[in-house]
Length: 161
Image (cartoon, one colour):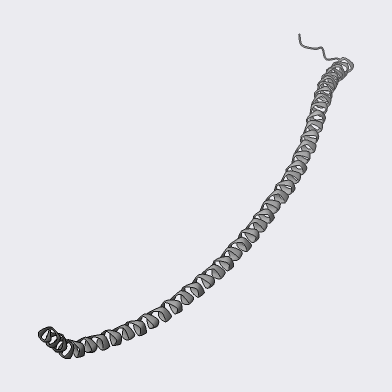
């Protein structure tokens, strides 16, 4: 058994230091992997914190923007209501003005109707006066003709027939 023991001893003498060296190297590598893993974990935690901070700021900004939009909508609605009120007021005032103008035109129409009636009355009166004037002229012509006849009779002239 000495060959087996010698083989064993040879393997222990030769392989053991190599295995120990490999073991030391593996342990060093595991240590480095653990260090890298720890740094990666720290970076991951920092990255997650930054992402959470960005999310929080984004949510806050989003809420602010929604508030601004809501405020703008309220102000726009208020202005729109004011404009509609102003338009309604202008329409009412315009309607009143048109009613006033319509009443004024109605009054003018009545005045024109009264004037037309007065002109018709004046026309009738003028026609009657014209007829009276013609009658008077005819009467005066008759008087003049009589006067001329009387004057001729008095002078002894005979009328020419």
